[in-house]
Structures are given as C-alpha cells and as structure tokens.
Amino acid sequence: MKNFVIKAPDNGIKEDIIKKIDNLNKPKGSLGRLESLALQICLIQQTLSPKLTGQCHILFGSDHGIEREGVSVSPRDVTWQQMINFTHGGGGVNMFCRQHGFRLYLVDAGVDHDLSEYKEIINRKIACGTANFRYADAMTEEQFEKAINIGCEMIDRCVADCGCNILCLGEMGIANTSPSSIWMSLFGNIKLEECVGAGAGLDSPGIKHKYEVLSDSINNFKSRHDNTSDAKTIIRCFGGFEMVSAIGAMLRASERHIIIMVDGFIMTACALAASKLYPEVKDYMIFGHKGDETGHRKMLELLDAKPLLSLGLRLGEGTGALCSFPIIESSVKMINEMNNFENANITKYF
Image (cartoon, rainbow, N blue to C red; front, side, top):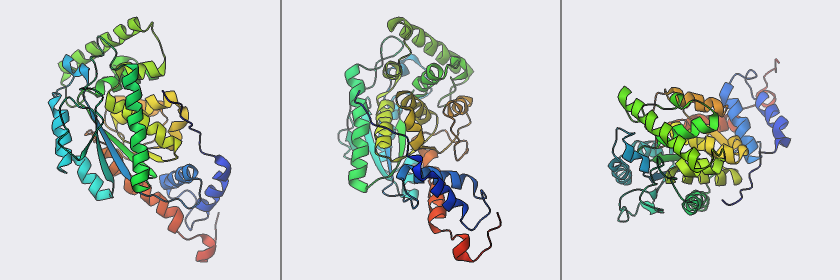
C-alpha cells in the first residue's frame, strides 16, 4: 500500500481558537457541541475563520462473495438495482444531497452487473464482487491496492472539480455488514456475537446462521494466515471493494486536510479500519449518526466518537452523515458570524 503522510492537526493555534469562541457574545460553553465542532474544524483548516466549500458525497458500490452464504435478507441484485436507481435521482442519498447541496459521485468499484451504459456511474470495477471470505481471502494484494487507489483518485477529483474541503462517504453493497462485524470483532477484541446484527432485516434464525458463517470465516482466516493481527491483512481478507475504496478516500482526505463526515455501521467500520492503519485519521472525522444497533454503539465507543445525531436510521448510503451537515454548517457560522462581547458592547460576565 502507498505510504500516506497523515499528521494530526497542529495545535499551535488551539488557544487562539478557544479564546475566539469563548469571547463570542454568549455564556461560555452555552453552544455545546457547536463549539467543539468549530474548534475541530478550525484545527483541521488551521484558521480562526473556517469555510465549508465544494461539499461532495462519494458513494462506492460493490458486491460481496459472502452474500452467497445467505447472510443477508437481500439478494445481491439489489446492489446493482439501487446503483441504477441512484442515477435516476430516486434514492435517499439523492434527496439529501440535493437538500444540502452536495455533489454526488457514484462509483462502481465491483458491482456484479454491467453498469457501463450508465454514464452517471464512474466505472472503476475491480471485479464482479469479492471472493467468498469464508473459504478464501476477499481480495488479492493487487485488488486491495486498486481499491485504495480508487478512493485516493476520487478525493483528488473532488478537490479538482469543486474545491472540496468537506466530504461525505457512502456505500452500496449487499452483505457488507458481515465484513464490518468481523472488523469490529478483530480490531476491537470484542466477541463476535456482540458484533453480529440483523443487517437489512434478518430474523433470529437468520442472525444465528450469520454468526455461524462469520465465526467459521474467522477460524478459516486464522488458519490461512497463522492467526495474524496485521491490520492491512485483516482489511484485505474480509473487506469489500467499496469499503476499501472508502478507506482509501478517508486516508487521502486526511492527508489533504479535508473534513470527513462518517455515516453509520459500515462507514464507522471503515473508519475503525482506517484508524488501525493511520491513527491520526480520526482527527479529521466528524461522526454524523448513531444507529440503534448495539454493535454500532460499541464500535463508536472504540473510536471514542460522539455522533451528532441519533435518528434510528439504518439505510446506509451516507444518509445519516448527510443529515448532520446543517449542524456542522451552524458551527462554522457561529464562529464566523456571531459578534463578540467587545463589539456588541455587552459586559463579559465570566
């Protein structure tokens, strides 16, 4: 994998940022999370007057070999059908992108269907889905590199096209809760049964079957790879092309000091995986939404993440993160547009 140069934001201006926030004409700390968000964004951009420009949403699509094991209530055909639906503007992601002014990029990283006639979809197909990780590594080293590079390419494209400095990521890939659960278990040292959920709607017998398949997959992986704990190997052997592309995008965005809005269970799993490669990537992430699943809550705790919203969403596509954008926007407007005590001729009382 290419070497990324990802550094934590320089804290040299932190005290000046805090001073500016505390001198806004309000009681100290009275705007809560807006204040901590503004601090984070100022540090990322290294300025006391931050801006949000060229907001982009990248949705990566791919299929998973593990779907063949019956771990999802939805068939893999839904992946390509939804990708086509997105080109017509009919998905949840389309609606929220329109509402909040995000430019949407649709990327086929490995959908098991020919989507070449749809010019709205950027064709970066690595293969028609990953291998079935119950019996083999999900992708080869070469495929892993391609997926990482797809994510990097898309970040550079967003910057070139739009001057993007705030990014949202989404995914479309039936059965991708399965690799997410495994990453959570292996990276977080959490029992697998605490990480496996209903996904798109499995019943209790379905969840039990999913657990058995994933448990067998982990055991077989450990046998193939001598019980390794190497993060890159774990990511490659279980991840989907869309997920590894998202990780590549997270790493490149951090390298370019771009704000990363993180969505639900799948994208949080990608954030967790990315942080195992480069821990500093977390400094560039704003977690938009907490789902109802116990697994998602535990994974957020692993990242010490405090999501902005808890709306019971479980659609994916990046929709939860998109819904949080007005809050992020409010934090920037707060630090830029609120008057301070001196200019407002108000006695500072603390």
